[in-house]
Length: 186
Image (cartoon, rainbow, N blue to C red; front, side):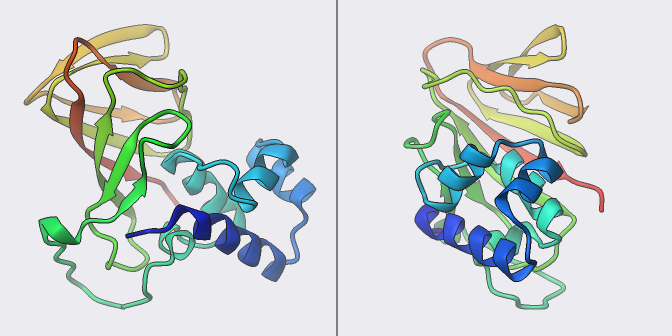
């Protein structure tokens, strides 16, 4: 299991190793210096999209941030019991992510099981470089993409350009589980 408190420590370690100030990192990412400080001091648990932005800015992989081993393997098998939680209900938005390929180092795609809670703790709006696939396994999600809204139910799949602002919330009283794959270009 990924320990969220260690994510901030690792980010700070890589930032200092690269001789990058918080101000420089803020300018590179578009995130505020205060928010970055809170992440490094484990006062904020950032969503995966923010971790991807930080990994690009620090020229490291998401695997480095999550503390995953540097095993150079051409195959990765993660059993159901071997999934790692990287963001839990205590995070800012209440989304929960489980890794599906954490042992594959330097991967180009980031696959997860994403769980959206029935009640969102805070509205989230995501926007980052790349592409994303969300295949709904359970429940119904109201998916906002730019100015458009879609109802996406179990068995439905949405594939989209992540540079357009987007978010998903539960529609109804059942949490939503999705297979989510994020691709971020070099």
